[in-house]
Image (cartoon, rainbow, N blue to C red; front, side, top):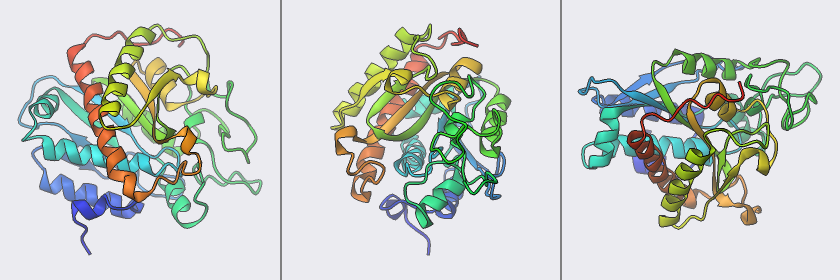
Length: 320
């Protein structure tokens, strides 16, 4: 049967249910929302769908903000939060002046579930699955999509061991999911900001991931992260920020590619729970879903507000 919005957010949903919910929202909120069936297919042939949110009655020039969910299969709070952010942008559009303004000035470009095969496998097979479902041809499966982007591909923090969680793939952008995201971002007219949502640890990670040298935009990234941390704090979540590479080196990430190749103001956000709650880790209880996603929504509006207030942050291309 049809789920109400409330029911939809009471539990972690399947790829098909998430997809049909976004289709439903596109019809219900057609003044703001557009559903795009596919920017490309996963290894197993699932559509990677996208969703645009903007005030269609306002036709002035708009910058684009990209939110990516579910690159890592087991991080279920990520697509759940990206779905919730989308829902709240639509439902607050007419009642919240700040959101109304954001929807005049921005197009939110949303990729709710970037790794649908891995996500479904984590639901039906191995709950701790992280990678996509590429058959590596040697008895192992999966490429870490967040090590497969071409920005410093195969540097530190990734491996050519096919069995490893951080296997970087046979070449940069070898995976159809990553190729689809890259082609999609390349096609955007005016992209400005991006957040790739992950879990867990309650951290806002600043690029770069491949080197411990801060980016030339580090002061700006630090300031934005501080404001987002304050917002999370208002909702009872203690977040911290650090250089991504200081947490652990990671190369070929979405964030480094978005920032240093595409010139976007971008972050990786590690959602709930905190690291001391490692026993929970990726398995955030469904009872915490809306609470965490609500904090993510308000911190995303803090991010968007900063980009509205500071429209001329220079592209961050010092390393490319």
